[in-house]
Length: 332
Image 1 (tube, rainbow, N blue to C red):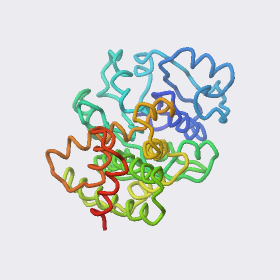
Image 2 (cartoon, rainbow, N blue to C red):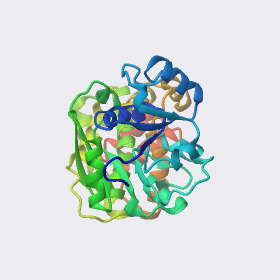
Image 3 (cartoon, rainbow, N blue to C red):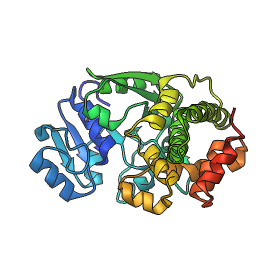
Image 4 (tube, rainbow, N blue to C red):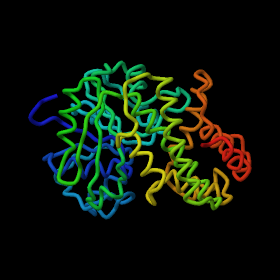
């Protein structure tokens, strides 16, 4: 990575990718932006905004090198920031013919690769042989919609190489985004997956008309559950009260912008999983994360009653009302 002007590419065309582009262009003179659909790129260039996501943000497209060919993008970039929904990551990489082990990979994906049940950093490490020191994770309580409004936000960059984490955090820091660094890659990734699951649980309770009292207990139990799981899977000296863990859980559980909470609310109101997914028209990462974490926990056997409840509702088709009533006896 050149210290002066690293060549940065954003991989993905959704709302979070759009927000990251806005963050970067506050300080970077130019970026590359990979989108799979050429028609989306053409419309973007025509109207100077993403036609499908966060369309209120106006971009200076002369500072963006758009491309729909992934090999061209990878060849010409030093840093690749992936911001695609985790279920589609393999599909995005399907046409890739170049090696990634010489690149710096930044995962802005708060999800897990289905079937493999691998967090994103481990997926790039195992499948594409990218050294862990060249993989970073971008996380924190930061909704794309609030970035679009330039509301004060906080992000954490995690990497095994702390110097690299600092370099990357400087690229993302600007007048409305503050950045921090960490070396707890796996803990941050797993907590990013689980907070989506717990937001679905909160949404289900909201749909069932449980009040704020119960939801507060649910969230306080969720952070304990998250702590037990992270310590079992990846023991590390971490403080889950930091914003990248607890803050991200809170904003996802309570915000009106949270698609996982919205998805859960629809389930609580009686929508089927498929109907809720179709009506939302966006991916609720927690749906896929629930199955992955549930399967991983079959090995570790951590006590996770909230996870088990959400899994029973989403995958075993049990009644949300009955499952949540049972859950009330398991929390404290």
